[in-house]
Amino acid sequence: MTTYYTGKEICGKYSDIENDDFGTDAHRFILTAVAKETLYEVPCPFSSNGRNLLTFKEWEEHPENYDGYHTDSIQKMIEYIKKGGTMPPMIVNKNLGLYDGQHRLTAYSMIPEIKEVQIYKEV
Image (cartoon, rainbow, N blue to C red; front, side, top):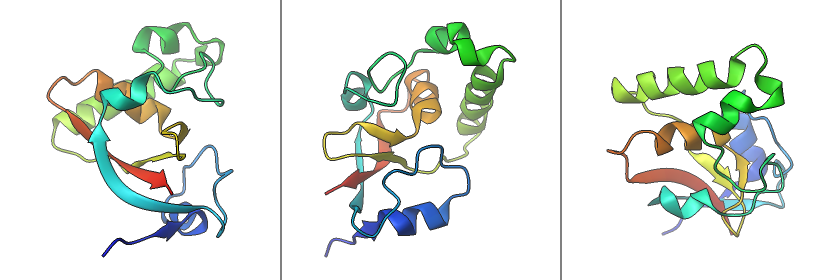
């Protein structure tokens, strides 16, 4: 049996979601896992480069990274994951475009041992 989650339920679980456009009862999701590489080149309207994955170098050069916030956050995520920590699932639309999770995707992309990632996928 498949469990469905509404966008509103997902937003209620996490306090640091940047883009909550999906946070309504009308948006429904399933929790699943995918190969991380399948997310990299997917078009993302919320991204400065037009695709899901921003590389660490792209974050370093991003105009909003003037205080190192983005790269520091990603570096902390990488260290946390390597110590055995787990991150919340990323949230994607029906076409795998990210609603939320760009920093996590960058962190995962820099850890070769991680092959699959958890996502809430819109259905």
